[in-house]
Image (tube, rainbow, N blue to C red; front, side, top):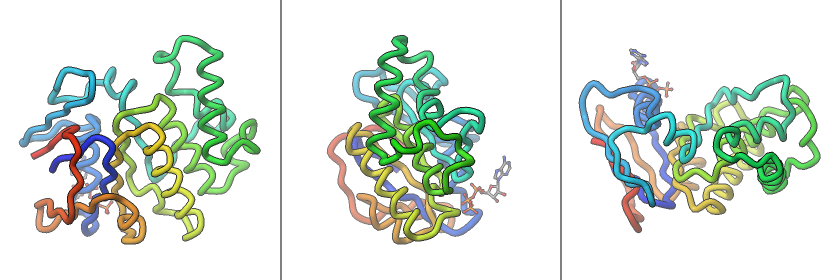
Length: 208
Ligand SMILES: Nc1ncnc2c1ncn2[C@@H]1O[C@H](COP(=O)(O)OP(=O)(O)OP(=O)(O)O)[C@@H](O)[C@H]1O
């Protein structure tokens, strides 16, 4: 598979076929037993591994189970990834406010996650994933536990943030409606990736 710069890709397939495993390998959270990865991030030397430093600066991850820090406010949760990347506290706060506003969450900025709905919480997690303007964002079943309306908002938030940062998006989903919103759909069939359609302006990375 190849993911291009600025492209949004859905990854589908039956339960247990390996979508989360593939995403975890691509995101550098797991090492593959076999196969090869290549990343060509703009402005960076090509690499076959996403190290923690590359992940911190250039990659965002959104999980189905959200994982916000319950004791921090919405604004503080969005700000977390910027520590160690952006030294200026003023710039961190400015960027966090900008992201929260863009996601339509300004009214919740000073609230704690438990005061928000599931969909709102997931949008905060999306804001956190995009806080450092990453080149590549992985989302694993980001709408898995949400109703249709909240799910639509979450997909819009993902696409809007990706287009603002011109980042690439890989979304694992069981939902054909969510998949249809992406530029391209990859499906794992009998252990192999099948693709439909292609929009490939420039390579960002491949896995085989
Ligand atoms: N850490 C692990 N060690 C060994 N096997 C694992 C591990 N994690 C997952 N598996 C197995 O690998 C297979 C693929 O799991 P994975 O979670 O990637 O599938 P999936 O397509 O994401 O499924 P779902 O759609 O249900 O989330 C499954 O058979 C699972 O039991």
